[in-house]
Amino acid sequence: MSKAYTLDDLARLVDHTNLHADATEQDMKKLCDEARAYHFKMVAVNQVQSKFCSEQLAGTDIHTGAAIAFPLGQTSIESKVAETEDAIANGATEIDYVINITQVKAKNWAYLEDEMARIVEVCDKAQVPSKVIFENCLLTDEEKLALCEIASRVKPTFVKTSTGFSTGGATVADVELMASHVGPDVQVKAAGGIRDADTFLDMVRAGATRIGTSSGISIIEALKARMADEGVESYTL
Image (cartoon, rainbow, N blue to C red; front, side):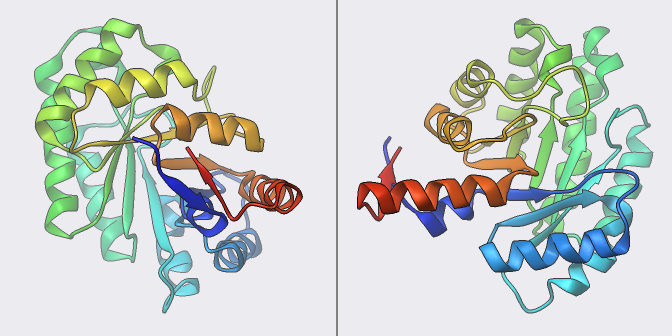
């Protein structure tokens, strides 16, 4: 279903991202200041940055998103649950966790459903949105569909295409596949390699309702200029 998006609506789709291991406290402050200035939805940061960023964004409607078991996902369910609980206790208001891809390759769907259910339960109890990162570049379509089926039962807030730290990022085909198979209660976040306005719009048209990118400022500035040139106040996507 098409929807009209103002520039602010488009900015509110952005998870403004800095997940680099060498990011400094000044980098985190800059990220939060930029998110405030552009009215992005969230800052996406490593879990250890949860407290600092939540303090920087206190009094705003911008969320602090903690990345859990990032970027490999290769920790136990218990570790992921503990990391999620710690992030929330330290101010995180959204959670993005990476699935255990070893278990995907083993087709251990019961393990993956348990992992997803336990993390989503923690988030739901805290009223914190949950996002499940598939890392699609490492998966077959059959594996992606099996994970979508699990998500349709467990109902995380979002399924997410990628970490942006592996061999590939979001594709329109993957967003369309995920959006058409997770059911009406689960949204899709596209992340990884989204660096320009056209790619951003393509992902929204494909069904993404959140976009993870470190290029949010240049994307929104490009859309602002394009709207001004076209004399429009919104895009219908």
